[in-house]
Image (spheres, one colour):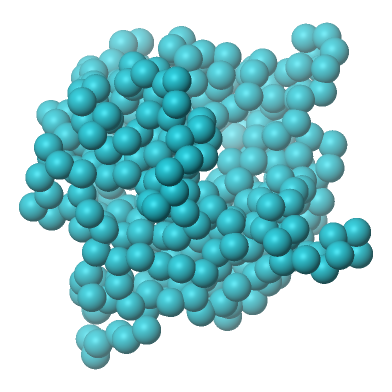
Length: 363
């Protein structure tokens, strides 16, 4: 078995690039393609199969075989669009949220924000999940069973069962929540503005058993705030547990912060603005990702580069500096994901790239 080292991570190079389609009305311009409706809003690897899915702002889901490096299929989902695509436990089915809002009565609004259970085999929906009435902000599948959770700008986290179209339970939250399970499926975290994080036991979630808060000065140090945004309302865009459950990785508009999952102390933090000094809201809205061994963080940055950090022996009071920088994307790579079982990374702006290490030592 190959040990993942910083040298190995630093040697990662684009092995395959899947460019977005360039139609006649785009004048065959690569610049158009990089800034068009083809932007990828989510990536997900299946936990066991060699499959990657990408949901895009042009209302499509694309499927890739990560063993052969081939594009497999594109599914059109025009009426409500798609975002936050996530695999279920089966490699041929996914969950996704919409990225459109169809106005009208309460029923129409619920349909707009319904979650959808989709068969990739025949592009048919297996189930709809109704309840959210505003934009869905996160979606996560429980690792051990058919439960999943979602969060929404309607200030709620909903717990679901794939076999039922109504939520199992609802947890009231503050504005713009994000939520995720730990990898054992025993605990889930709900993140909120300013780096407020609440931990819940999946068996008893009426109230959190722990509440953490990222200190405001840490968010300021890593330049997490866009213009006009104060530390207490900077949006947390994603929360993730490390594979061993010992760390929490929070993504912000312009930074990531890692917390000790037991004590809530800041372990490391870094800026994702890169060399881009644009401080407008959303300019550095990217998702950080942990390597499967939990040693390394990678994230797309506002200057269109991807950076990698090692948080071992990090000074929690200072912004962590990257040990590697990767070029190649024409737009901001807002999605970066590690494959769970391979020395493989995927990233996406409007194009999807697969990355492999250039030199792999003998095992």
